Length: 244
Ligand code: IPE
Ligand code: IPE
Ligand code: MG
Image (cartoon, rainbow, N blue to C red):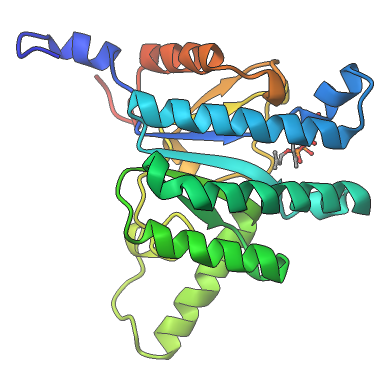
């Protein structure tokens, strides 16, 4: 960008700093092909890999994806097991290549409800993330927006009782207790798969996110689709309750 660019031109070329995606539509993608739902989850994991690298390359700082919700335990045991196995495999590979790929990863969610293997992977990812700079992918696992807020409130109450915090609770101080502590709120929230709801994702953080819904199923989601979402994002007028 040259120094002569106008503010309007800069606005048009802006890349969202933080993108959140609800990875939805894996099951329907598989059904359309006569495959088991689990094949859709495997395809979805591949799509995640591509989109995460693309986000890194175009200058997005944070990508937060919804991979397994606190409500997804209601699914058949076999499906849950397969999803967990895939996550385990994917996270293992990702952790090995994270530093080389210049990306770090964190797990958001109630990790205590995951298998000991996944808990250990989340811990290793955190350790690496603590000393790697650059693009960050947050994978939401056993994540629920309400659960996150209740957890945060409990931890705050504990700190208060222990005398570790004092003064009035503010939005800013409360957000330090969320899984997303220290990272900016999502600018753009994308939901593929055709549904137009949040399904308990990032309830606090999406207060002023721009929403983009598409019927494309997550395993079919491409970098061109992401470009489209970003183009729509750029055309939005973000007023935050004010006037322009
Ligand atoms: C999203 O795809 C993945 C998870 C929720 C784990 P779905 O499995 O919800 O796919 P659909 O919505 O049934 O097509
Ligand atoms: C949201 O998708 C959760 C994830 C993508 C992890 P769901 O498929 O679980 O959402 P609903 O049931 O359609 O609301
Ligand atoms: Mg779904």
